[in-house]
Structure formats: C-alpha cells, structure tokens
Length: 297
Image 1: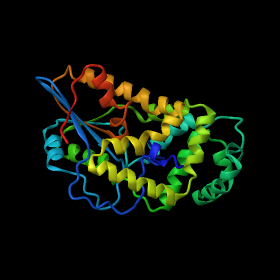
Image 2: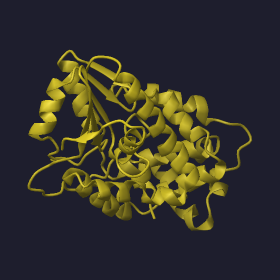
Image 3: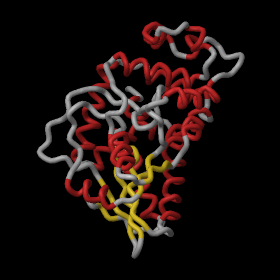
C-alpha cells in the first residue's frame, strides 16, 4: 500500500507538497471541512487543505470566502518560497547528508530494488548522490521525481492560492513551523521508519493516483470520517510515524491555537486536512482540552 496519502500533505522536494494530477471530482457543491474557535475578540478558523490540486478543482464556497475575507492573518504549516525552491532544498541538505551510509540500494528490500533503480534513472542524477543521503532525504528526492514524471505542477494548491490572496490584500501570512523544523521530524525517525517511507515512495504511480482520487473526493465533500480513513488509517499501523508526524505536531498546533486566542483578531489557519480529522486531530485535541470548536462548513 502506498505511503503517498500519508505524506501528501507534508513536504516535497523542490519546494511544494505534491498531489496526483487527475481529473477533479464532479460534485454538486464543494464543502471542504472548516471549523471555528472563538471568544469575544478572537476568531480562529481551521480549514483543512490539500496542498496541490488537479487543474479545475473547485474548492471555494461562500462560507469559506466569507471567512477568508474576514481574516486579517493567514497561518499555514510552513511558508515555502516557491520562487526560490533552492532555499528549501538547502534546508533539507543541512540535515540530509551523513558519512558512512550504505548504498541506497541496500536500504530497500528485494521487491523494491527495481523500482528504486528506475526512479534514480528518471532523476538524471548519479546514483552515488543518493547513496550519500539519509534514507528520508533520498525518499524526498525521489518523491519529487516521481511526481514530476506524472506531470505535477507546484503552486496549484490551496495554500498557494491563499498566500497570494492574503499577500495581495496586504494581510499577514505566518507559519506554524519552519522548513527546517518540518524536515527535522523526518530526520529524527529511526532508520526502519525512514526505509518504510522510501519503499512507500516507490509504489506504483497508478495505485497512488487511485488512492488520491478517493482522498480528494472525501476532502471536497467535507467527509471528515472519510478524510480520517484515507489520510491517517495506515499510520495506525506505523506508531513511530504517527507519533512523529501527526500526534506531536498536532499537539504543538493545538497549543498554538489556545495561545493565539489570547490575542484579538481573526485568523485563518489552513493545514493539511488529515491534521483536522480523526482521534489525533487538532480539532479533537482542542475539544478534549475543553475548547469549544464549532464546525461552520
């Protein structure tokens, strides 16, 4: 089973998180899930995103547009400079290179060796370059290559559209994590978990496309249960990945939301939809800590 849907909403090499370029699902009305946390002088909207979208995907709604217009600040997972992807790659390479690593081909099982060889060949880079990278970083490099081979385009997702909208409106755009902090979550994974990530990246693109179709359909309908299943269910079988990439980050973001409620204003928080669905979601954590969260779409 592909790890694509686990990591789609995270990072991707060359400065964007990727999504499979398939036809947008036909729905009568787009209603991606959105919640609100509010008191007398502060409102925080929580909107679940998909970081890149197929051409033609209609995800905006009157309720969302009203919330975005009312918000004076946008906060996303991390701010990536799409005009300078080398900066993001540079942050990755600060953590990615280690001496004395075995060849990358020795870090996957026999069933994935052929796929690894083909992916490296598509990259146009010499295999020894990958051999110098830690396993998680090699996975990111190859993830970018695989998506590029499928004709994926950066800058087509929710965050890109919102950054443009807020920036052009003279509003503040902030982040919950730096690029380095996001890469750091992967850098601290055990080698076994990193290899699981790499092997998932090498799965069949056709299977990834099918999985993404189901994920996109659930997201655009606002099917939170479906989102939780499609984004997070496999991580239940990978406790280390779940803890590092979901629970810890969601706990940090939950604390951020509660602290931000002490400041007046209206904020749109737009993060990967999987972070707002399921038992370990920011929404669930806020509710368990006594915070009233109201679904508004």
